[in-house]
Amino acid sequence: MKGKVIAVNISDKKGIAKTPIEEGNFIEEFGLEGDAHAGKWHRQVSLLGNESVMKMEEMLKKNGFVDCRGIFAENLTTEGIILYKLPVGTKMRIGETLHEVTQIGKECHDGCAIKNQVGKCVMPLEGIFTRVLKGGKIKPGDEIEILED
Image (cartoon, rainbow, N blue to C red; front, side, top):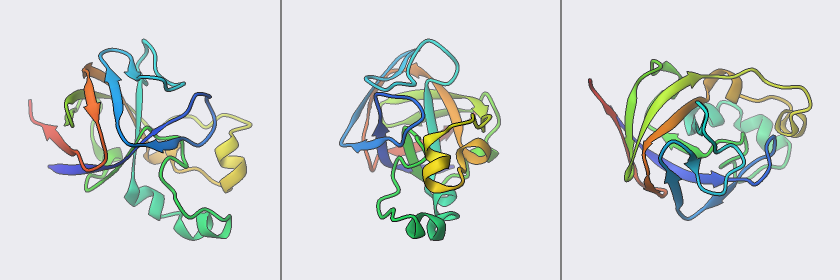
């Protein structure tokens, strides 16, 4: 199964939308260099499929959003793989990096700027989290390959 990265997104604060960047440096057992969510924990990198974002396209447009990359605070916006159907433990090669899925979805916290701004968030149900097993660069257009054990 293969997909691709359509955006790499970063923010220096938690709970806000992320901004697309041209290329990200992902550090082994840490996450995206310079991102507020990076660290030595199980949710180093967040991924959300553009397929999930598009489910909310109408609501986003009503709220004035044109570019939806990073709007749900995901580090990687992807396409071609239904991410939330991947089991925990799945390994993925993304660009130069290797990731392991550690969590599907998350609990949405009160006061989330994204939920307040957009009205609803798909990340709690359809976003996934990984830890970085091998660091390297990721940029839009890079292939995502699901690895078989």
